[in-house]
Length: 157
Image (cartoon, rainbow, N blue to C red):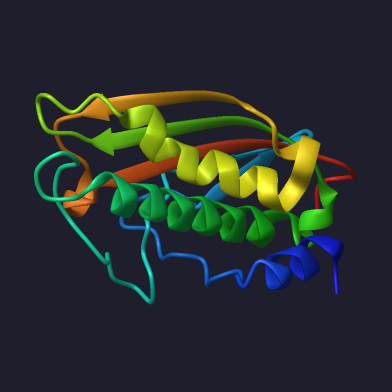
């Protein structure tokens, strides 16, 4: 078992199945030594556990947990491209979109869910640049969507 999968297990987490794309795109794509994910939603077993806007329909703690789930789904998409997550040299960038009520300003606190998850899993390799953006709607009414860029070692498969 890879060290990354062992670490996930220690954290009580499992790598989920890769979410089926909802359009004409792939979940993740490798070019050179970088893997870019498409926007990943916090889908669990094919369903969104919550929908709506942060600040009215969804509370901060739930948003944080949904960001963690979306971040885990992004890792599944990356694993689908590179196989072994131990090939991740570092998490380079996380972009988080938060479906926000007009007066909601805690987008960074929501996206901390994925940022802190990657720190727990990868340690220093999980430190990354980040954007946390508030938007007025997201696909399927999801409260959170994340995109991730990682640097990987080895040749492209």
